[in-house]
Image 1 (spheres, rainbow, N blue to C red):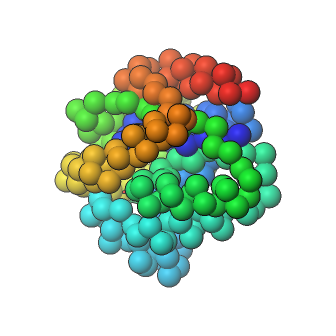
Image 2: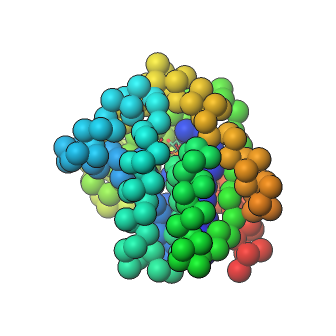
Image 3: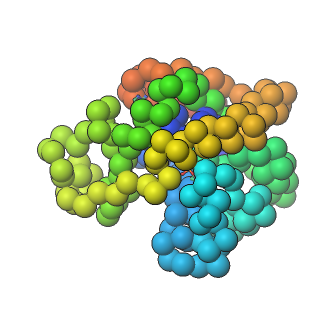
Length: 217
Ligand code: ADP
Ligand code: AMP
């Protein structure tokens, strides 16, 4: 099964992808996570991506399409995958269509997670992750069960993203509306777009996505 989670920054794509990865055995492919790893490792891709990411702009289509093309060749993608943060432009969507066609793979669904812009600012500025296993948390909405200890791996080290600040958030939201929102009519026309209410609480959103996936199976 191949699924795309589509929505603005902070909509909950990563949160839901982590849950679906566990429940449905679909590997999560987050271009944001891959790019942050490249920046941290100081690779050529990371050097090219860093300034765009810090400014809340999109990295070039060429870079992200290349990253995804390589990644889906790996063995853990054979059972299907869940795209989180890719595609983000119509050119990326067209490149993905070509890659899937070449491998005779079918896109199961594009799940649009609809969230108001005002809620996104609070979600993004309150977000943090475990530095060791990348489990996502939120200062108010999703705290670890034991304060300061990761539920998943027991680590006491947490990270905040360099781009999760108020200034960059507005640029990221503008970028979403200008460059990524046109993917909604693109996938609607292909008959694969399914919309869920991303304003609902985390478990409710999971249940809505589960219903979409069950209807495909
Ligand atoms: P995205 O991957 O779409 O950028 P995340 O999954 O990282 O978004 O979610 C952004 C923040 O909002 C995280 O801190 C997460 O814990 C929180 N969050 C995710 N889904 C919800 C929800 N349905 N209600 C409230 N907070 C949420
Ligand atoms: P994310 O973790 O999905 O919020 O992505 C963080 C940042 O990485 C974005 O603001 C972009 O700068 C970059 N990025 C991630 N995915 C893509 C993509 N598909 N196309 C272009 N840039 C991307």
